[in-house]
Length: 221
Ligand code: ADE
Image (cartoon, rainbow, N blue to C red; front, side):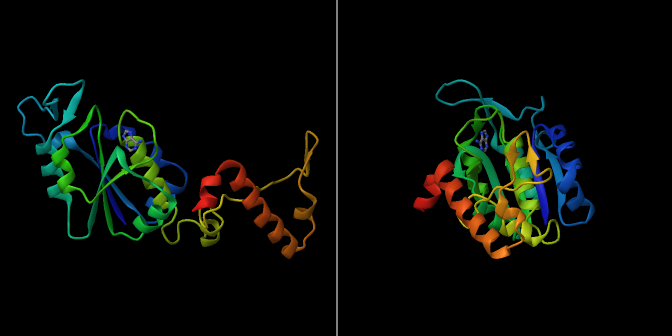
């Protein structure tokens, strides 16, 4: 999969993509990530990419010209263009699965007050990573790249996905490692029993208990 990230702050990404599983996925050739500076596409003599709001209001708005030119330069018939904005549809694990099947994603990061509304016409979807407002789309782009990369075949074991929280609308079961007792807190006896059927039943029950406790909305779905 190829991912292009369109941003005004290209340096924010280097460190994040040069660690852990994303780094390995890049080295294995599972994902090819390109960071594109939107400012490189401005035709303005002063390198401007934003301007004031028509009708009045605070802040600056990203202009059409550099973003249209940038997307048109990069887009192919296999591309899915995603605008990152707090007013988009809320990103969910199911969308991560769907997007992981695409050949090419273009992630458009906003900043300041937002995008000129006409930029939506060149995008396929608008996504938000949650009901809060960030200073820009860069961190949401990192979230989306991370959640998709780990789903690409051969990046982590398939079993890890099956156990993911949200895989079946339930949160993941709790896990423990050594030691058996830490500061008086014990690992549940059943996990030491070696009885796989009992362990499975215990984990299933825990998934329901945890979901009921932390995310009852998932059980209503
Ligand atoms: N830009 C600012 N806030 C955002 C959010 N919550 N999701 C996606 N993009 C954003």
